[in-house]
Image 1 (cartoon, one colour):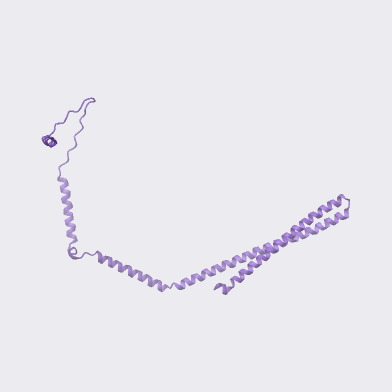
Image 2 (cartoon, one colour; image 1 turned 120 degrees about the horizontal axis):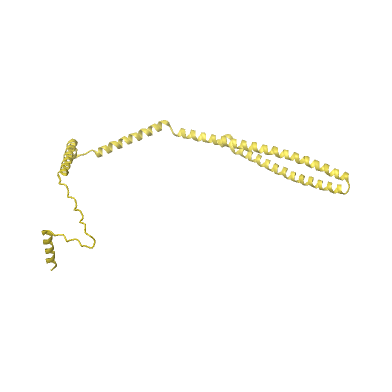
Length: 215
């Protein structure tokens, strides 16, 4: 749409065409400058030859032509500078135009998105989300509510019963006799076997029963 309204393709084509033309002209001037530099150098060599041949008039004519060539070289250099300046200005203008066009396109896209997103629609959507969230909370609360016999239980009575159980458990732990400490190890001197411990009556009876079963 903006391309049709503001003619971006035509402007861009004109800018590119102008840059191409300036580049071609710059290349042409550089070639002419190289030719004139060679001509000036050749005139200097001719002047040296005429000087060695004692032909002063011919040598001076060569130097005059060299001066003319140098003037043209200087003129071509000025032309190149002007073309460089024009190219820089044209490229800057092209970059500015592209930047403005990009900003214009962004502004148009933002406007279109804002137009598509109505504030009333946003409010309506948020109300629907809040309503659905509240409904879900009510459903979860309804599912977690006890039903049947479990609904008749008194929470305070259950808490009191639990405290009684905890108190009875603590009292039972306090009334339990202290556990006997393990017997201290008996010291046996090196090289001497420890005396066998005397077995109890139950241990001897168990040993006799195991011996009978082995038979």
